[in-house]
Each structure stands twice: as C-alpha cells, then as structure tokens.
Length: 421
Ligand SMILES: [Zn+2]
Image (cartoon, rainbow, N blue to C red; front, top):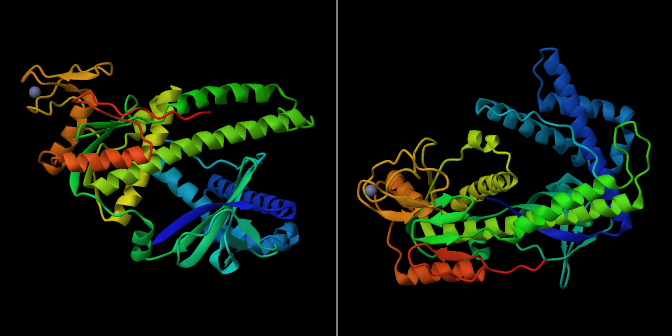
C-alpha cells in the first residue's frame, strides 16, 4: 500500500537555490518532451514517453549539461507525468472534453520535482527528522515522518514562500491501521453533493462547506487585479523588469491560493474520512463531467472541483478502510424521484429546495430526498437506521473536526464554525 506524508521543509538559501534549479530542469524536460510529442503527432507519428526519455537522455550531456547538477530523477519523472497527461487527454476526449497537455510556465514561488527512493534518506533526529538528498547537506523537516516502511520516492514542491516534501512510502495495512482512527459503524449511507449543503446524507445530516471560501475567493479576484497593475512584462518579448511590488503581490496571491486550497482540502479530507469511518457502503451520484463544463459561474465551478476531489478521496479511503462505494448511473433521476412512493416528478426546477410529491403527498428536503433515493436505487433497500448512539458518534466525529452540520428533519443545528481570516 502506497501512502504519502507531506511535511514542510526549512531549507537554507543554498538548498532553496538548488530546489529552484531542479524545478527548472523538471520543467525543461516536460516542455521538451511535450514539444517533441506534438511534433511527432503533427507528422502522424505515434510517440511515447519511453522513447522521448531515451532521446532526452542521449542529448542532455551536450545540450543541457546543467541538468547534471540536480538529481537524475528531476528530468526523468516529467516524462511519466507527460504520459499521464496524454492518457488523461485521451480519456477526456471520449467524454467530450478537450484537455490537451499544456506547456509548463515558469511561475514565481512555484515548482516541483521528484526524487527516487534510492536517493532519499530520512535521518531521525531528537525532535525532528531530516531529509537527505544528493548534492545537499541534510534539511530539517518541521515534523517527524509518521509512517514506517520503504521510501518509494519523494516530491519536493514550493508553494508561496514555503517548501514541502511529500514522501511516498510503501507500507502495510497494519501500519495504515496503526496511524488511523478505528472504523466506527457498518451503515449504508446515501450521499448527495451540491452547492446549498456540500453533502446531504440519508440519515438526515447535512454538512456545509466552510464559509470563508467564498470570501477568500472574492479577495483572490481583487489581488489578481492588483497584480496586473504592477510593473511586469505583459507579453513574451517584453523586457520590462518585474518590480519589487509585483513580486510582493505575486507572493500575496500565492499565499492566498495556498490558503484556499488548504481550507478546501482540509474540509474534504475530514469529511471523507468521517464518512468512510461511519458507513460501510456509501451510495453516491455519478460524476457528471459534461454538465460541469457548461457552468461558468465561479461558485459552481469551485463546487465542482471540490466534488470531484471529494470523490477521489472517498475512492482511495474506501479501499484502505475496506469500505464500498456505489455510484448511480448518470441518468438516474435521484432528485426527481419521490423517496416515499417512487413516482417521478417531471417539473422539478433547481430552485425547488423542497420536494413535494403530487402522488403521495410527501414533503421533504430536496437533497435529503435525493440521498435516500441513491440508497434505495443502489442497494435496493432502505438506508440502515442510525441509532441515537451512532448518530451521536458521527456528530461528535464531525464536530471534533469542526465541520458545520445541520439536521434536515428536526431543524437541529450545530453552530457553524467561524474561521478568522
Ligand atoms: Zn411520493
């Protein structure tokens, strides 16, 4: 089982310079490979990353001698990434989406490169561990490596003015269990995801996405606008020097980006873990890739990104925890079906927050209704009953993780969390 642990690094100036050099080499290899791939494609030749890597290695000594200053992995791994990017492109194409791999731009305060496990050592210290990679003295990590096992590789990244290492470890199920909280219950739970409540569960619970995201997103727009006004080259040939104020604004923007990503990730991780811990079978909608593309509204676009990440997290966590994820067919009308009698309502608009059944008279929250339907449809049964004790346990778990929840039926509400920014 492969697990990663991401830890912040505290590199000195020399190490930072080395990292930046490695980021550059990784970007160079990726862009070189992409250009070659495009060229072959134009000439009707099928390319692949093995051939490209070989070609790159054959000419790097002469053309790019500086790549020898960094780990050989920095220029080898990008070809694997390129292959993944093309695989995604071909897969998306089948779904009617065009995601042709793009060239990587040089960005201030951003970058990443990979190092294979044979070139990495984690040296244990008293309070903190150290990372040792070729060509550099050991670098202090801000935390101890939590998992035990063979180190498979590591990726060093920069986000804003911070550096991180994500160490990938080949470990056992026992080691995973040792580092995680135990499984709680064996329920079957329907999960409907949306904008209003991020997740509506078939036990009546609704979980809200953290509120600051909206406000931070507005600030993001403002900072991007401010950045554009600072002195910097606006076109490729432009020789304007990047002003200090420009660089400062870039850093501010980067920090905010990181903050938004972290807030969202934190929320999605906590929610997905809570769900797999409390339910044995999770019933979800299928991801509607096509519909997602149609939406240009920012709030919707962000929520789509979150929902897609949420599904990815649930999938891998379910595997580790030995849980099951079921997904309804794309065309299953989970919102339009009555969870009471099964009749389908044709004229349900997106604004109808409450589902009123014309056939049996049921009045129920729209998303709650959908979550029950997902269970009924996928396991052909009713959702398992959460006992008050199970419910308290789940609520407790969500509260410990500071997730804002509410109950649809009783109107009971937990106070939404305030995050100060
Ligand atoms: Zn009905």
